[in-house]
Image (cartoon, rainbow, N blue to C red; front, side, top):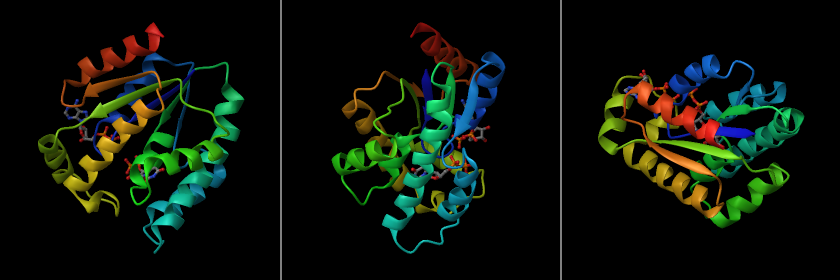
Length: 189
Ligand SMILES: Nc1ncnc2c1ncn2[C@@H]1O[C@H](COP(=O)(O)OP(=O)(O)O)[C@@H](O)[C@H]1O
Ligand SMILES: Cc1cn([C@H]2C[C@H](O)[C@@H](COP(=O)(O)OP(=O)(O)O)O2)c(=O)[nH]c1=O
């Protein structure tokens, strides 16, 4: 079972992952970018905002993803693996290219492996604005509200296009309500 938690920055992924660690103590928890030793270096490069080319930045994320699938996902096929982000983020954030082309590139990186369960935490523009105002923003988050809402729309479109088993959850619900929905979704499938 390859479960991924998706959502734009501040949607509540880390909050829910901490709760899931208690609920599923035997699961393997991982993340993109940075779920492998090479991935830690690629993460630093990708998030440091050093790349002048958006295409170069996308290939850093793709390299991270290829290593992550090979080293973490395929090696734990018979376990529950729960990942903070996935190719859904990869496709949504690389918004200079169209989704179909990005699906092809990402399927090369993942050797055609898709998540079995996608949980998308969905924010309204109002709630996003409020949450971003509470934190120090990295170079990606500084691109703004409209940018991130567009990324969220691309996430939804990608999940539907790939026809992956999924749940969209209103990220403004109470933390415990979201936790329950996620737990039920994982246990039901
Ligand atoms: N359901 C929720 N309702 C209100 N605030 C939340 C909720 N979930 C998370 N938060 C808060 O929103 C902010 C971003 O949450 P976080 O889990 O770090 O998001 P992400 O990992 O998706 O960036 C944090 O301040 C967190 O405490
Ligand atoms: C996986 C992935 C993430 N990203 C972006 C989304 C996030 O802004 C950032 C990764 O952030 P994340 O690890 O979620 O950040 P934080 O620890 O700050 O919450 O990288 C891409 O642009 N492309 C990708 O393929």
